[in-house]
Figure 1 (cartoon, rainbow, N blue to C red):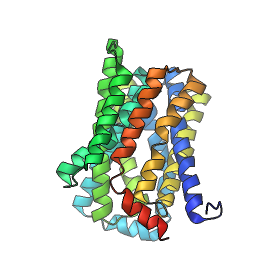
Figure 2 (cartoon, helix red, strand yellow; figure 1 turned 60 degrees about the vertical axis):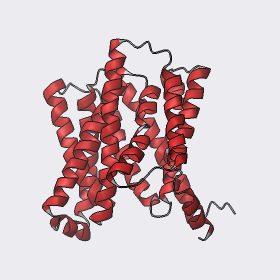
Figure 3 (spheres, rainbow, N blue to C red; figure 1 turned 45 degrees about the horizontal axis):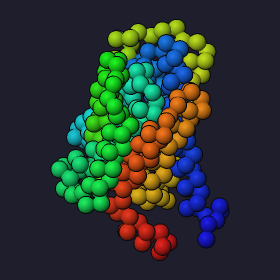
Figure 4 (cartoon, rainbow, N blue to C red; figure 1 turned 90 degrees about the horizontal axis):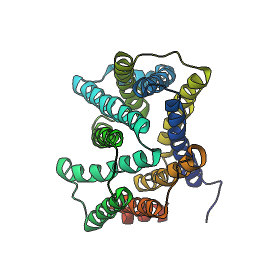
Length: 308
């Protein structure tokens, strides 16, 4: 029976809140970029500020500090690479892509990361895709082809597509590496998030300042950066990790896919981005494909839910 008082229902609602906050980030990023805020500097400021918010939380926990002091050179290397892939490359590509492309297009392309993770996992982690997952890949690719057909893109958008593809593969690499770190190192999520974010954010901010400079920001721009850092990053990441204690990986993946629908709707409402019936069908087909790709462990997930 569906009960708002159950811990599972609260976790689902909390996870949906997180996906909504992450979806609003795209609108806020577009607003900031429209105000001539350089994309790399913008991203670097957001995640550096978020790191500065998370760091005191880490320093206040003696058990987590002990685990940091005990990190091996191999563990540090893994966290450095994770920070570079997920924050420096992935977030840098996302912000840069949003400066050149509609938010819905960037959203559709970045969702391909789930497919890349599945394909790379079959090679790196010996996790062979099932026939159902291959069907999901075909549905997603079909949705993308429908969305972009006929292919008539200006040079600026082609550049944006290439930049976003860098984000797709760096995000997929970060997902696989993060899975291995969490599986082998047994580190608390706060340790992994704070250290990797700090490393990646500093590199991203340095790249932004060196290549794009640090402009004089308005109060509105500082407000957007502060909100993104405090609420949509520090708070949202912490709440998401909290929900993972209750939700299965399958449930979390399905809830996370809500962003594929939320972002176009928010872009339509607040940014004036419009969609025709062909593009809406393409999003629906791609969304179904991404969902199917992640259905590999559905029977086990159903069994776990039924026996709780």
